[in-house]
Length: 171
Image (cartoon, rainbow, N blue to C red; front, top):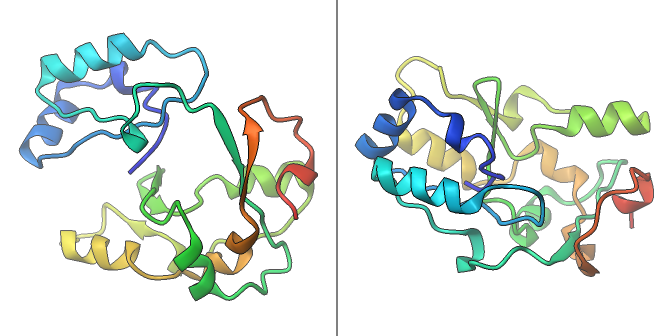
């Protein structure tokens, strides 16, 4: 799973213990934002947890990918899933694992209505949730995939802050 990793230094011993017991590796992406990567590496090493940077790079991510959304929701979910570079990158939010947990912020900011259904996440607190169930969930297209137009995703050059304009997300 890939995320920023900015909260790693604040994790308690229970978190680190769980990582060790479950052989969890941490694979953050090095975005060019202010993060103490050396401190994070040190904490992970002290805690005996493997830290590997996403895309096996010690360099900061210097290019951006424009991930085109289709607000009409009429993309082929299977084709979107197959073309997705993020389908191995789950987001954990309020105890649920999503492919796109933060779409509510996009919807609110741009007055959109891209809908997450109960089939678009898995509750990690579900009684008797098996690891295989999580793997099965992550290995198939979800209803939300209909909002992605992965065939139009493109590298757009140097990493820069968002202008918070909807054109950054549409084709």
